[in-house]
Length: 311
Ligand code: GLN
Image (cartoon, rainbow, N blue to C red):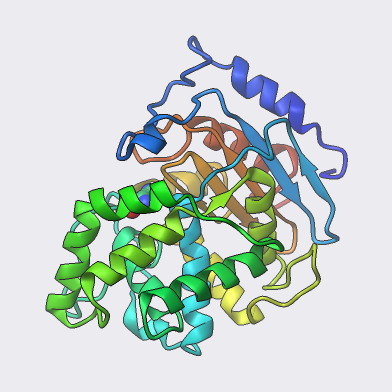
């Protein structure tokens, strides 16, 4: 029963696991100084149920930048603001490649899916607004509706990711050359970097996941954020593409649609059941939080959340 599940006990088990509990057997991302400085011992788990009940472990209010866990929500906002036409502009097939691979769909020049960087650069550019400031504001407003509260942006993270995100600049220019990116390349990177720099905590990210799991209605505010069809489309693509080149392995072992990120956060959406978030910075080779994966496997097993289990 998720109402009674002991998240602090699960957290202690995760922290005790392995030889070097501090490192948790993964590597903290070092793409920008702020991410490299993340505390490897941070570990939090949060669940939000359809009745709005929220369960959290220790550390669930510690802030971190959302990074790629924002991608499902950028896709949702792009679908909402284009009335579904975003599906003509971005593919929905898994790539089997890393999150920042310099690769577009052959033939169309579209990004392969909204869960890799190319796709998120594009979906962020499709959000309503005639310039970067308007799109930034629209994304902030949309993410706040998913979260049920206003979220701030870590300006240093946004600045550094814009400055140091050479592969993102390369992807944006490549999409410009293909005619699939219709805003300026630098503007596209700026808006995406800012969205990635949005500060959340495990509890907030679980509310965001729960909003997708509840068909687009935020279970804490009762507000409809996106239509049911948009939520279903987003969760479907999380299931197939959300963990990059680890998506197949994830679906077999965990069986819950999810999105991983370089800050070590994972947002999960089990439709009709719950939203969840886990965060722990050390990452495996696919950029998935090592403890986050273990926590997700335990939640799936203990709460019977695997999508393909017969019972
Ligand atoms: N902002 C990061 C980037 O674009 C996000 C990547 C991730 O979390 N996997 O490199």
